[in-house]
Image 1: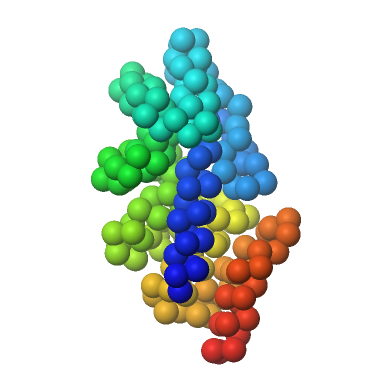
Image 2: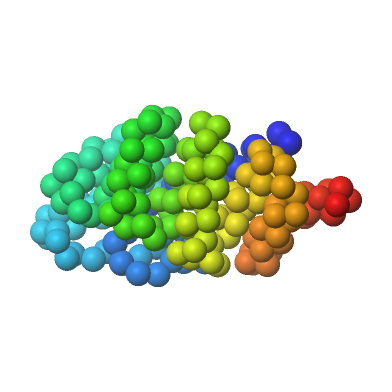
Length: 196
């Protein structure tokens, strides 16, 4: 089970390292790689958004938090600013602030997949397993092909909620959506099949 926990943390950090940009369309990892939309932002704000996204990609959570905190106050309806602030706070281990930022982001844009996944991770960390399940399911409802929503939901079912059949479904879906099957997840699938 410790391997499951290690992968959850790794997936959360992988997802957290990618900035959520305004605009449509996820990349192959299910994390945002979207062109910035300038609607509702001045050219200065759009440039600062991009600098904050660059800071996140570089792992500079402090700088990213400064930028996205300011943008979230200046353009309060921009869900992506709140989501990126949440990501920066998550990287800083400031989970309460991260959770509040992600909750605001999904309040503004309920289908913001990356924010929902990260919110699910935070709920799971807090032992709020039903809320984590709801967040992951909402992410899958918005983007059924999201690998990481499937993986995190599978782990939640397997390790925390003890629902092996449901875990198996999501692990297999994660593998099917991956360019190359993950060896650890393959072991988890085999383990569940032996238990069923």
